[in-house]
Length: 328
Image 1 (spheres, rainbow, N blue to C red):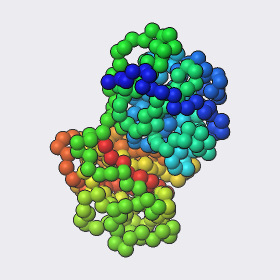
Image 2: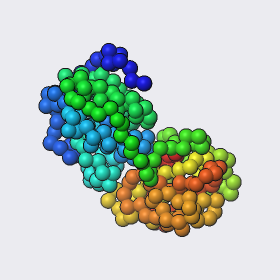
Image 3: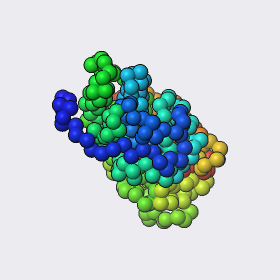
Image 4: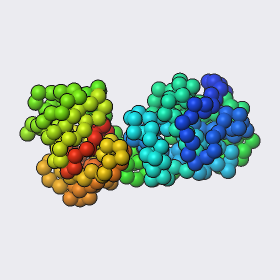
């Protein structure tokens, strides 16, 4: 239930957007220029699965309340270096139908100005330029929208009390939290956990890896010629693979070809077979797909019942880079 407006005290002033790398969908905006409008500042980065699953709500609010005086500003602060590439960001925002202003924050200047620490993060700003509420992570969409409505009413706008009802599909659909038994897992050695190839990781050196025939739950392994760096692992010869014993409805992998390199073809298997009806949005029923730039690829979406399964992706072209597995 929405708290009384007096229970949303001022948390600070809108810092503005100094230090921005670039703006998409708008001319550069300033805190002064936004006075008189309610502002929702949405921090994200385009491969973050948690941000992707919150996007349908932010997108719907931007559309519904623009005429009532709301401006949504998305802040794209990259986790990975490739997320700072302007063409990657522009392409991702177009594919996701993000039409509200996006400020690219490659130097973390805006992130630091807000003292932000999370993707996604929402900051709710009233018409006087004061931050009145924040929310970190997914969820609490109803309260967030009611806060926006409250701030718009405070500004004298007549707003319908009904709430948006987006129907997210594909990678934007809410996670199956009841069946989610595998956590986000990084592939680069800097943050890797659960790696099970014999001999472990040899950092920053090309090496031939193999995947055990049996993996325990939440273990993963490489096969083929790879160089494992601190952030991505890079396939050096065609035909390498990654295996993962996981428990979740959805399996995603942030991956793609090296920057400015040709697309990478891949083949996905589930328990050694083509995924069939368990294929994700970026894979056909035979398990075939192509990674044409670095982003989050949905590789598995299982129908019920959800159990522990062995996932394998064979990368048919050299130069593929794998960053992090996420689940839903």
